[in-house]
Image (tube, rainbow over all chains, first blue to last red; front, side):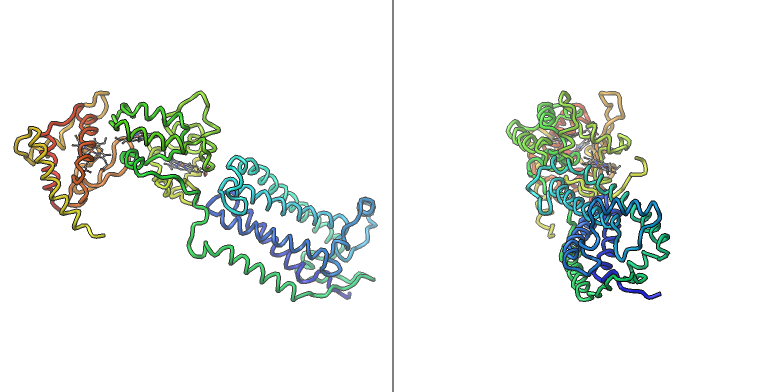
Length: 358
Length: 125
């Protein structure tokens, strides 16, 4: 039986790379140590999708939206034919598959937009870095995850549809997405290969990926957390018996209470003179959790009961929820967080993961 | 980093400190008495584990200590390995005040301070 080219090379390249990018984004999600890879994979998926939208207008005959997007009446008729077992075999996408492609592209683009939003809000990076507050970023973290679950469900339906259609057509459709060829459909045009466009696409993507990863390749830790305010007087007054607990980890009222009680500081008399004590207190309260400099601060500010004035970071409900560690170990933040001195506490700097106990 | 100037400063600073303690009423300092004070245990007012300077600074002045309450690692106390020790009189007084209050339950006398400083500066590798 004669075969003909249905899927041009750019469409197949798009399909393969998008699958890889989505898998990469999925595997690197949820762990900030992989955030730079996650962002790279998401950017790649979005760029590929934008290319596919363009290709839907200027691509080969079966790649164009015009060739496979049908109105509701045609879709209903197609479903009817499918159920009756009389549906004809299309050259490219059938009307259902066509809309499924649009749904996937919309999901990927929505994931990219919400991803850039969360990155800008929570990490202060990317195009929206500095524009959004931490709270605004956190607000879309849930929806971003929900969209990724929706894409996973979509993938399940997609695979089921491909298997069913393959059985119905008596033709391995996944193979057609690799070779581009399908059994000839009478009257349907064969598609040019468009190898040059595919080459351009791959080149642009490789170049873009290298460019965006240049920092990581040069050894930078891209999401090392926002730089925090520092003060030598605070460090020397508060950093000699223990870690100088960064101001954003307690509400301002807690710092005021700690400084008011400096003569009986967990059994120690800090004995600070009034002047330096006032300066340290000013530094602590003016950069306290309420300023929401980062995610941790946001959580401290929003999960500490307003009527309480905790004197310990390790007594905060938020901290306890994330730290199922014995009290004896709790205070030695540096044992698990290599960046404790910097105060950033990013996942990327965890030295000893105790996830198993969670 | 060149530590030589700091080491010289330590050698100069410790005698300066001791002179100040003598001016405040201490007699001739004695390193053996300093060692005894450094390792002596004092009953804790809360009935907990007895306290000593070595609770936080560790048994060996040449090695690091570990803060008994916070777990923070503390640099060695002997200027022989930690040349910045006893170079800043205000810092030294601040810590004597705090640590003596917590460990002994009162401030240390000029005599005790002079003995401890002499003992720690004389420890050699």
